[in-house]
Image 1: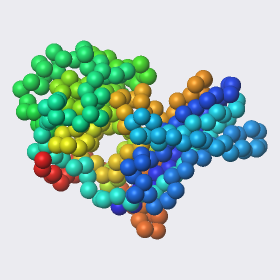
Image 2: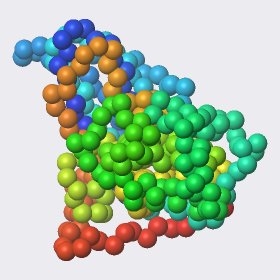
Image 3: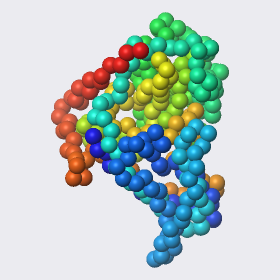
Image 4: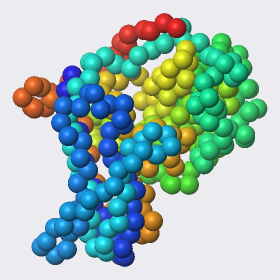
Length: 300
């Protein structure tokens, strides 16, 4: 399966502003790239455009980041990539086991702790009341995902940058990052390492769902590996392309500006294409939604 992704994000900067972005694909996808994965940074002044050269580095989570300082005025960040991945939907590990904490790899331990948007220390009793009855492992992890999906309503108008998992639990509404923050927090409270991720999730072999955007989901550590979970969509999907992973949204912001940056344009698309680069037509939604894709099962 070939997937072409592209973005065009523009800001107006009142003053010179340092910025950090996470707009590259994750290094784990380097082997799948069939094109470059460049970030183009343009400073636009009247009728002239000046290319800025970002400096790339890997952060403490292994994400590829870019940093630069932009002059005051109009700034454009754009890029595109082509990757080739398998055409299977998200793997389902129905027999995946939950490891005792003493047996967890060192690098997973930080994903059991509280973080900016995931107040694990406030959810111990809540998580126990809701999920103590479940069997450890995939059964418990998927019960948490399903509960969040069923109890939280999606509403773009309810987005705010300060909303934490406890806010979502109380208000029961939010956007994709809010679903994932609550599911991550409940998972950690039940001793399942969970990390928040961001990336592309286009309308791949599902009916068109509207204008493109970057997406958020999360991953849990079971049977010695990370598994994709999505409390917002809650069905196996094709074409997830990882960009960054961290403790929560604060670690994987697409752009971070150290000063005021006013967003003036935002465009993101991720689509399956054929070998000639032509977009593959999507199924048409008629009447009831199409049945969920059946995902392959992977045992422990």
